[in-house]
Structure formats: C-alpha cells, structure tokens
View 1 (tube, rainbow, N blue to C red):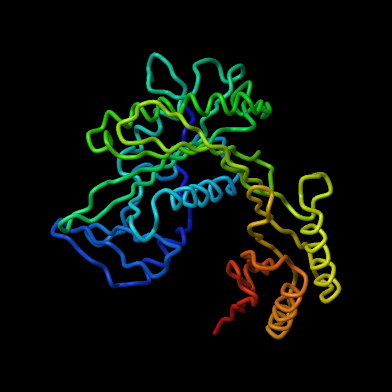
View 2: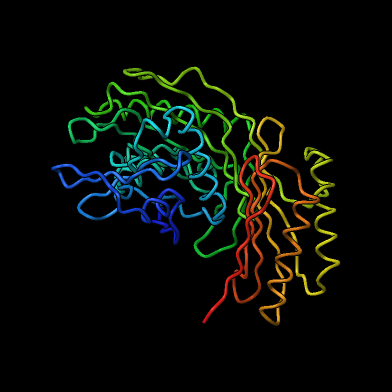
Length: 366
C-alpha cells in the first residue's frame, strides 16, 4: 500500500546556479553563510558548513509521479507565488528544514492504523484515489545579529488530476480522471491539516504561512500542471481561509484540440514554425510550451529537434532562428528556444521579459 520513493532531480534551480557562482557570502558564528544576491529575480541562498543547505524532504513523492514536467512546474510556480509574499530584496530563501523525509513520507501515504498521519484517504488502491501527490516547503529567513530567523514559509501541495493504479502486482496500469470539484475539495481539506500540524512547531506558531495548491498534469502530458489556488495565513492562524483563485494554464503548441489558446499567439507560433521548417530540411519537430496567466501569454519555451552534420550548419541555423523568432514570435514576453539533436543540446536562444533581442549561444567542443 505504501509506495513512496525519493526522486533526486539531476539539476539545480536557477537560484542555486547563480548563487554557487558567487563567492561573496556573509557568514555567522554558527557556520551558516548567506549567498550574495546577484539578481533581484533570485533569492539569496543558504550555505551551512561549506555546503548548500538542501531540503530535508527534497524529492519525496508518491511513486506514480512519472511526468518530470510536473516536478519542474511545481517548484518554479511555487517560487513565483512566494516572491509575491516574501520579496527577494527582504527575505533569504532556505530550503525546507521543518518537514523531514520520514514525516513527508508518512503524510503522503494513506491514513491507516499503522500511519495515522497519512493525508491521503484510507482504503484500497483499486477503489479510493490518492489525491496528494507531492509537497514542497520553502522557508524565508531574515538575518538577526548574525543568525538567521525564520519569518515566513510557503508550502506547495501537488494534487492529482489522474489517479493511476494496478489491480495486481506488475499488472496492467489503470487510470481514473478525478473530478475538478473533488480536487479542490480534497486539496483544501489537506491544507487545513498541514497548517494545523505546522503550527505545533515552536518556530512556526507566529509566522505567516502561505499554502498553494497545484493540479498535477497527467503522465502523458507534454506540459506540467498549474497552481489553481493559494492562501496567506497570518501569524497564529490554525485554519486555512481566504483562498484566492489562480488562473494559470499551460498549453502545447501547435494545439489542434484546445479552443482556449489565443488565436493570435497560435498563428504567430505557426508562422515561426513554418519559416524554420522551410530553412532546414532535417527537422524532427518544432513545439512550444505556452504559459498563460489570467488569459494572457506570459512566457514560451520552444524545442526544436533536428539533425546536424557540421558546426557551420548549427551556427547558420541558430542565427536564422534568432532572426525568425524576433520577427514572428509575440513581443515582450520571455522566450527561450532550445535546439537539440540526438547528441544533445546544440544551441539555445533566450529573451528576457520586455526585451526586443534574443541572446544566443552555440555549444562547441575542443
């Protein structure tokens, strides 16, 4: 019944990457250092005894989480919500230190006599769905007399939209699509229990705690899920209230099935795709992940898969994509383009929010 695994992600977030490249850190007598901030987009991080302070429950998830895009979207989306409540110029981000691996595993399991802490409903796997899929804790600190004090926390709860199960060991995998109303109901009920348990810890009794709910995408989805609600709980509160809805959607382009994608955005990408395909004959695919907030396009990740036979072709193609992207793709939003072959990433392009021009880089070897 208990099928939990620890998934180790083979990459670091942008926060860690930026932080580790900077040696200018402030230290305290406890061996804890704060990594200097190199961009207002990123939080300062925490190093303890020379090592980055990782989450005590990093990667703990119910085993059925096979879509890696859910993991990426969950963590990145949670950071965006946190930035609205805990500004990067005021707070220091410390990865979760209050929910350890054993606690997280118990909470993610079903409730039972042997595990009364389980946040998933009791019952048989073939009859009762698992709702809570993953969780993440972010601690927000302030420096006081050389030490770090926790001043806020964000908790993300990933709720399944599709439940996968087997009727027998190693048998066929069945799936059940979960009702949206039930997803919201279960997510909010779980959030109440989580807040009550956190308030039992001395350090967490009187700090604001943000709880955000994430709807997991199905395992075969080409985009991750999305956050659909969050609540900012004032110091001392033990019941989650004042839920705020979020209108966040992710789509794959080209998309011939959804009527929710903005026609102008879809046409712009289609024009870009057509021009790119005309230029180079060996393209395997041109697809995009389009990110919408409140009905407006806020970002796009584009993947181009092709075959190359020489460095000059890679350089020429990258330059052409750069020109074509500027001409056809929507203006002002952040866009990144990854050009890959069977040998891996060949080049990439990127444009920041509000920017006009794309930066590009072609990978070489010696």
